[in-house]
Amino acid sequence: MSIELTMLALSVGLLFVLVMIQSIAGTQAQGIEKMAGNRDSLGAPSAWQARTKRIVDNHREGLIMFAPLALIAADAGISNTLTVWGAQLFFYSRVAHAVVYLAGLPWIRPLFWTIGIVGTVMMFLALFGVGA
Image 1: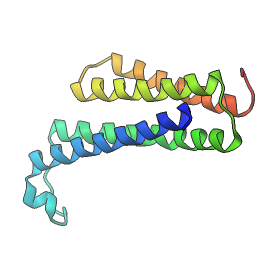
Image 2 (image 1 turned 135 degrees about the vertical axis):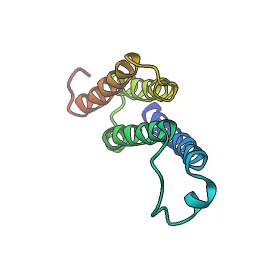
Image 3 (image 1 turned 90 degrees about the vertical axis):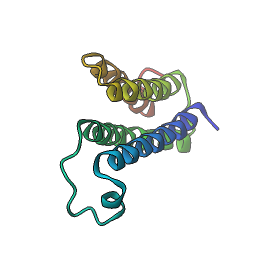
Image 4 (image 1 turned 45 degrees about the vertical axis):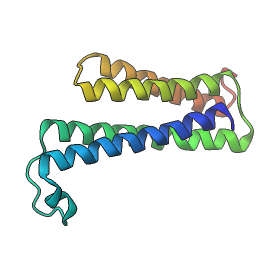
């Protein structure tokens, strides 16, 4: 498997881990009975529960942009320095972003988000032969 597809698979794995953390946060904040029910009468989320939802949503948004690019590159047989670095920047910055976001650390989180976007842009540009 290519590095680009490996980074995509790991990014999906990261989403799974984040969803599990979100599930635990929801159960802690709302109780297992409410979370196992239809969820029509959930209380306001705790700060932790809300943060876990935001990180899952944020990572999902990043994957929506990155995944098609990685799959297109694989299908087109495009793998070069730009795609490899772009994919690695995306994945590793998303791990750092998640850790920093979950820890509630301000200011540094946007830096890791930006690095992930740069990796995604690198993948996009590589598909069109820019900078390869």
